[in-house]
Length: 375
Image (cartoon, rainbow, N blue to C red; front, side, top):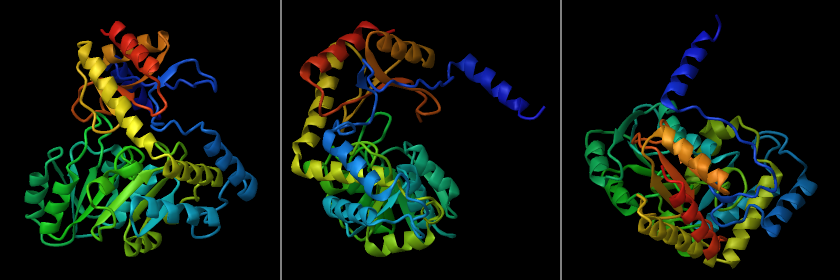
């Protein structure tokens, strides 16, 4: 029977406690949200919503075509110009998602004969970029510049190291300065995904590469998403102008994809400008994450110290992680639940995201619920 194997896989997922389900949320959910990636609390900010509304009124509901045909508006170019300037890079290129931006950067910068050195903890979008690229990929130990250095030494030709700046599972930061040094010793490029760093790390939220002194470097390319700290949708690649020009001509997820909807571009631009005026939001997100970690560990929970705004709390098993998250929801708290295969180490956990707009009372309430429902 066609697709009969699907039933076998579904049964295996049920036995392993790994079934995933969609839970549509209402617009006015009563739950305290520690699951979304809205780190700065901007997704519903009146200025950001107004930016989306004005863009839709001006440009319409959709981009109407690929970026190279009709999908590039003056709004897209304004967003690219201001995003590059904010993060300290020469140029930027906006994509319909952060996932598409990562696929573009890795595949277009790793031609035949090249070597890609990929961190073992990288996000799925970087992993998929490596799989689709025409170069050869070597996966190395997590957050280990020496492992990158040794692997690059085995290759004679174009090479690229690929890493998240802040890893999405545990929220730990990559050693960017060490990675850049290893790459420069071998003439390799460095591509880093700053999805969880933009808006949280660096001066005023300018990102992890900016904090590491790598902004504007001619051998560093950065990808970001507009759907986390900026509260919108879409992604971008930042780097030297010649790299961006190459992506325009070679990146398939740019050439063949419809441009980002104007409403999303307008919202992201409004959020970026708001962050520029209110840089304290970045520091507050970090402060909330640190406070969450301190209170969770004081309550006897095994939580990973956050380097940005993600706080990870270990769970005994996939089944208990699911039950724990469900019990939190029943008590009025929405938390993330990460299980295999989403976690590279196979350890299930609750994933909490700090938001700059959380109050001390809300933080204390969240800790009480998590501690009170632990398996």
